[in-house]
Image (cartoon, rainbow, N blue to C red):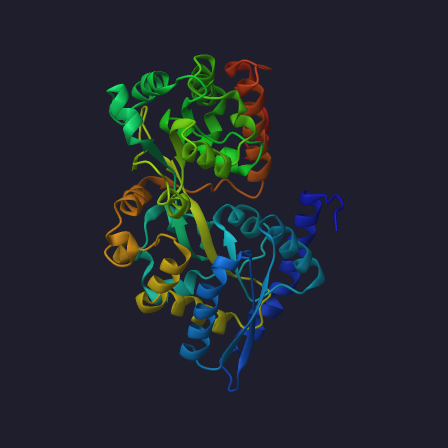
Amino acid sequence: MSYSVDRRGLLRAAGAAAATAALGGALASCGSGSSGPVTLTWWDYFTLDNFQPGMNRLIADIESGVPDVKIERRTFPFAELDRQLALAAISGDLPDIAIVDNVAMNTLGGNHLLADLTSRVAKWGQADQYYKGPWDGCQVGGKTLGIPNNSNCLALYCNTRMLKSAGVRPPTTWDELASTAHRLASGDRYGLALSAIRTEEGVFQFLPFLWQSGGDLDTFGTYGATALSFLHDLIAKGSLSEQCVGWTQQDVNTRFLNQRAALQINGPWQIPTLKKASFDWDVVPLPRDREAATCLGGENWVVTATSRHIDKAWEVLEYTQRPSVLVPYLVSFGDLPSRKDLADQGTWASDPALRLFLSQLPLARPRQYGPHYADASQAVAEAEQAVFTGAASPSGAARTAAVRIDKALGKQ
C-alpha cells in the first residue's frame, strides 16, 4: 500500500505504546526461562535470494544450539522495516528480535521501542571485544540497546591502470584527491564518483567529509560549508559529475566498473562484483583533511521492549556472537565482523580489500544523533543538492541547513 504517514506523530504514538507495555513485557520476561519451547518472532530486511542460505543456516544453528527456542522469521523491504516496527508498537504486535540498520537506533531507541540490555551485557563481559564505532552505535541515552550484527564503512577504490598511466599515486589528503581526480578526468570519464542522492545513502557518503574537516552536525554552519565547498570545487573543475545528485552507491559502482570513473567512494559490499571486473583495482583509506574519518554502516541485533521473552531473546543474541556461529554467518553474507577478536578469522583475514575495510573500522563513526536525526539528515541532503546543482552557495546552504539541524538536535 502507498499512503502518506506522519513519521514523527507515528513514532510518538509508538513510543507511548511501547512505554505503556514495557513494564508488562519486563515482568513477563522473568518467566521466559520456564520449561517448554519458546517461539521468538524475528524481523529483518534481508529479502534477496543470495541472503537466504546463510540466514537459514543461522536460524537452524540457533534452534539446535539454544535450548527450547524456535524462530518465526518475517522479512520486509529495507525501506519498510522501521515503519512496520512503529506500526507494530501501536498495535502491540512487535517482534521479539529484529536486525535493524544501525542508523535506526536513533529513532527506535529514542522512542523507547527497544529493550535495555545494559545489565545483561555487563554480566556477559564481552563489550570490550568490539570496535568502538560499532559498539557506540548500540548505545542510546547511556543504555546498551543492542549488539552489532555486522559492520561496514567507506573507502576509496582506485583503477590502478589509470593511476599508473597518469603517473599518480592513490591520494591520501584532500589536496591530493583534488589534484588526482583532476588529472584522471578525461573525455566522458570523471576522476571521482560518489553518491550525493537525496537520501540517507547520500548523507552516508557526505558525513566523512564533514568529520574530516574537523566538524560535526552541531557545527555544520562552519564545517559543512568547508566540506560542501571542497566537493563543489570538484564539480566545477570537471573532476566529479553533477549527476552524482541522482546516483545511488550502486550507480557509483556501475560507473567505476564501466571505467567512466577512475576513483569511487564505496563500501565492501561491492567487492564480489568488482572481482569480476576486466581491470585491476585497489582500495585505500578515504583521503583525510584535518583528521581521518569514515562512516559506519551495518546492522545491529535488538530486542524489543515489549517482548515477553527478553531473557530467551538475549540468549539467542549471545549465542550468535560465538565465533563458531558468527564467522560462517558473516562469510555467507560477505560482511565484516564488528568484533576485534575475529580480525584473523574468515575471508577478511586473507583478502587484502576486505582487510583494508576492516582496518578502517576503528575510525568509523556511527550516526548517533538522537531521535530526530532523520530531520537533520534531510537538511544535509538538501544542502548537498542545492550546492551541487548551483542553486545555492556552500556557505548559504550550510547556514540554512544548520538552523534545521540545530532544531533536530535540540540545540534551539
